[in-house]
Length: 139
Image (tube, rainbow, N blue to C red; front, side, top):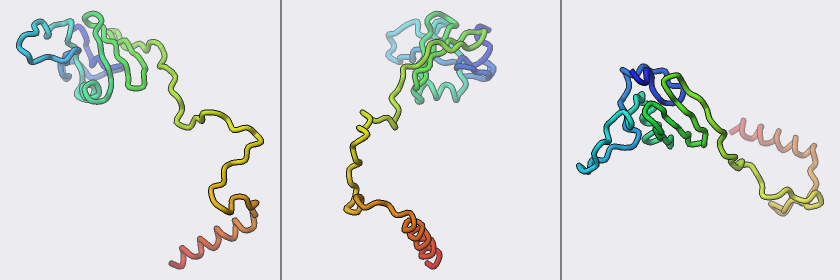
């Protein structure tokens, strides 16, 4: 057996219990020949098959038995009969919490309500929390 286990990165399911997947999708046009062969097949567990088909994972087979995977996050893996090797690093992605520029230290934050220019009074904050708690407990 060329690939004894699932060819998904770090796969462990024995190949005999896997789907035989076409690396390049099979075309049902009746004219394309040679689609089913060792150059275009590999064992995938049902879960791995779904990840490839619907989960954003991309697969190529540069040569028979060598599978090059790319995850939705950009990680790349090379899978052969001897195992999985992670190759390269994904491109940096901007953080969802990043800001376009740091505010200058002398800039005040924009007011969000008319009372925002009033200084905070810690004793009133504690009282407001206690009032809120008592009001909700009584309700």
